Each structure stands twice: as C-alpha cells, then as structure tokens.
Length: 452
Image (cartoon, rainbow, N blue to C red; front, side, top):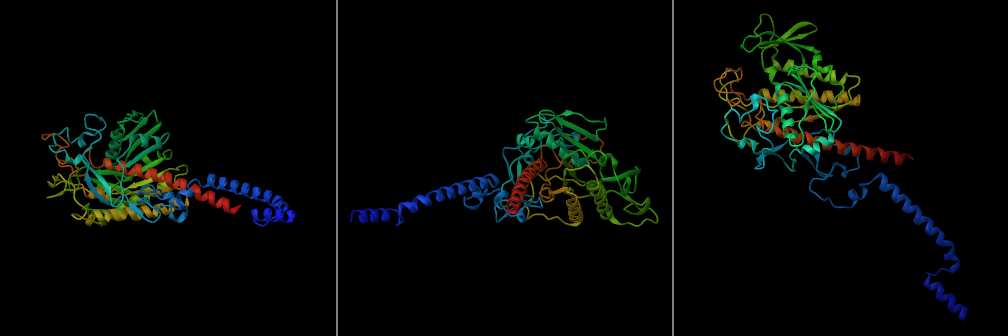
C-alpha cells in the first residue's frame, strides 16, 4: 500500500509520468530550449528590426521605410518618402507655412552670396520672404541640419551641373553649412564658372560646372533677333567641360531650363536641323522643346556612358520664373511679397511642357542607368517654387543706376530665400537613401537565409 500510495503521488505530481520517464525527457527539453535560444539569437542578428515591425506600435507618425520587409515596398521614385507601412508622403507636394525662426544665415554672415542674389544689400524693403518653410501634405520636412548633412557626406563629393540657378543652389548650400564650417577654394581654374570648395574637417568637396544647355553650345550672334544673343546648340555632342570631370563625384545635381527660352539654332550630325525663334531664312522653327528634350537625352546618355562613374544622379526639376506684366526683356517684374497657396496658381503652358519633358527624359535615363547599376533620383522642386513669386531679387539685385541685362530678375532667387528649402529636400533624400540601403541589405540577408 505504501508503495502504491507513493507511486500514485509521484505520478500525479509529474503529470502522470514516472521518474524514469522524466529522467529520459529532461535532456530533450534542455536541448530544445537551447536550440530555440540559438535560433532566436541568429534571427535577432540578421533581422534587428523584426520585432519592431511585427509587434511593436510605431513610435511616430512617420516611420521608416524599414517597416516593410518586402522588396516591392522599397521606394524607387524618390519623390515619395515612406511614412508608414501602408501610406506614403510626397515631400514635394504641400504648402509654404510661416517660419518665424528663419532665416538661418544673413548676407552679413555668409560671403558666398552672389551679388545679384544679395537682395538685402540692395535695399529690398520687406523680409517676410525669408520666413517661410515648406510643409508637405501629410508629413513634416525637417529644416536642413548642416551637422547631419556633413556627417552623411563625409569623405564624398557633390557637383552642381547646369546654369546660374544651379550655382545659386550651391551658394545657398554653402551659406546653410556656414553655421558649421566654411570651405576652402580648391578650384583647378581661375574661371569662376567652374568652382571647387573643400570642407577640410569632413573631406567633403562641392563643385559647380557651368553648362547652361548641358550640351556643346556656342554664341554665334551676340545680338540676335531679340537682342539677347543667338546660340548654336549641338544636340548630339556632349559638353566636355563637365562630362570629362564628373566620374569622381558621388552625387550629381543636374538642372537646366531657362537658357532654352532664348533664340537657338539646333545642330545634329554637324548639320542645322531647325531652330527656336532664330528668324533665319530657310530654317524651320521647331520650338525650344525639341532642343530641350534632345539636350537632356544627350546629357543623361553621357552620364550613363561613363565607365567609372558610380554616383547618384539627381535631376533638380525646373524652377519657374515669375515675370508679370511683360516678358523678362520687356519690362516684366515680380513684385509680390507673399507665396501663393497651391489653389491660387497652376503649372501650365511652357512651364508645364518643360517640366513634363524633364520627367519623361529622367525616367528614360533612370531605366537605362538601372541596367548599368546606376542610381537616379528626382529632386522635384517645381511645384514648391511655382508658389514663390515673392522669392526673386526683382530690382533688388543691383543698384538702381546700374545698367544690367536682367534689370528685373525674376529667374534667380534671393539668399537667404526660398531655395534654401532645396537643401531640406536633398538632405531628406540622402537620409532616405540610407534607409533604402539598409532595407536592401535586410532583404538580401533574408534571401540568403532562406536559401540555406
């Protein structure tokens, strides 16, 4: 009876199993627990964000693109910043909102401002145009952080390729970074159209390459039909002033547009094929858009054809001018002092056509570049700048008595001013690039693990 009682007690306390059975089972449980622990450790090393994605609630409204492990969710068009696993925020669509903290530099603290964009020096009476920031619909766009930017581009190089608005953009960036450091001039030529600046602490180089038409061009008549010069564009020939220099750069910011509105003669295969408002006998007017498309295609083709270029190419889209009451050479001006709301104006006419050509040629170049392992990104500033008729120098880019070609400048932008937001866009895109890179590494690791 004692034996039976003892045996019964032992069995009931052990789930009905005998001591001998327990003794045999215990090592198996230990082994299973050990294997489970090892597996969890491996998973945590390969997928550090797995638990956050699957179970943890998002800690902010705008979460990282890492929130989805699917390769199809990687943002390929950098016009959209992923804000959650189920929604996207287009950082290029939004409104200008007041920013009383601006500006972040002045014409007295930054020496890089070109004279023609130094609006405060030349007596612009209002200063509200410096106190706006871009607010995308559905998310926030952080103000440019120079320290963060310099850390991202440490040891790298960036080139601005285009006309004087491209140079305007580079000068804006230098002024924004000036809160941290000023660069030294390391230009290889005394020609001011080709500048190089180095931030020694960060081993970061900025450069600008003057190429108003992106392709080979020459002024063939300094007067021309509109008294603004007549240019010959060789639409199938690259401009080696920049194409021979850019293989070493990590980032290219390409832009062009305003110079195509001048009278042009188009050359292909060393023959004249047409023109834009050249008024030459027996030359067909093909409009500026023919030359614009061909020039973009040749420029992108040159980039894709470089053997050693491994950088990221950004197309900074067309920034519309805001001449009112006349053309730029017919007394037009831009005297507004506040931004438009998005429902107060629309991209149309020649501005819309130029923008669409840019986007179409960008997509074409991106597809070709992808096959060669190159990256293209669209820095889509057009809508934001369409809303800023108040941001141009107008008559405050020179002294009243000066005789200048562009008396009322509604093409370039005051510094400080609206194009400081272009650096906000660019920094956000660089951060998105880092997120995309991490996402791709996670997907690659996942595929390798599954293949084992």
